[in-house]
Amino acid sequence: MEKIYFVGAGPGDKELITLKGYKLLSKADIVIYAGSLVNPELLDYCRKGCLLYDSATMSLEEIIEVMSEGASQDKLVVRLQTGDISIYGSIREQAEELKKLNIEYESIAGVSSFLGAAASLGIEYTVPEISQSLIITRMEGRTPVPELEKLELFAKHKTSMAIFLSVQGIEKVVEKLLEGGYSESTPVAVVYKATWRDEKTVSGSLSDIVAKVKSEGIKKTALILVGDFLGDEYNYSKLYDKSFSHEYRKATID
Image 1 (cartoon, helix red, strand yellow):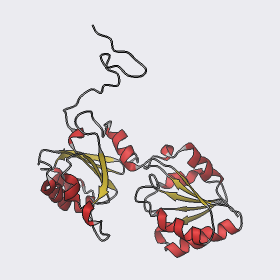
Image 2: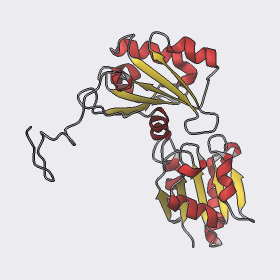
Image 3: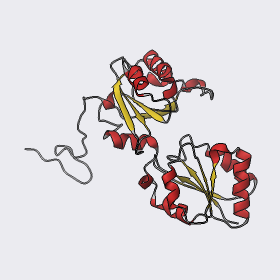
Image 4: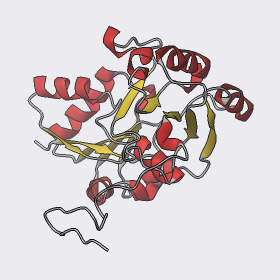
């Protein structure tokens, strides 16, 4: 019996799938892809005769049934997820169902949209002495979040933050961030469809980002990036500082 492969498709750009993911996709007999999120251009990598299933219209039971039938026939089955499968990928429930059926699976790392967004903006989340931590989260909506993971509680840290699945409630997001301790002048960037051909970026601060996002008509498929890492203040790291010694280099003094 063949195993199931969970493959991270990358953030959008079809060339940002990993080489390992591409090889599996190009050899697959069956591909179940997240049609509402995955760039359809990635399906160009599939070989002729590959069976394609759009999971946007499928239930968990239907997805598992396709996987099970494929595995029992020694078919190469790829479950193609957006970004990296470890972040908001809903993979755990599929993996647990496969375990019940004694079907092996393997996860292939991808490139998350928060990484694609940073690359598009040319920024670094961890700026020396400005922020050395990144919080990846989302605002509660129809699906709740644990009590200790409320947006306003995370905001108390005033560190770099990447907020998924929340742009439709941008007003509430800003309200919670301000409540938690960010100032109105805190820089914000909203990246719509990071690395896609129709990518769009809106930059501002917590004081004006709501109006800017609404004027652009962005209502979904966007990341909200918040924190002083987006600002003009920065410090150079010690890594290449000639006056700083480490294992591979001794300090030099002018």
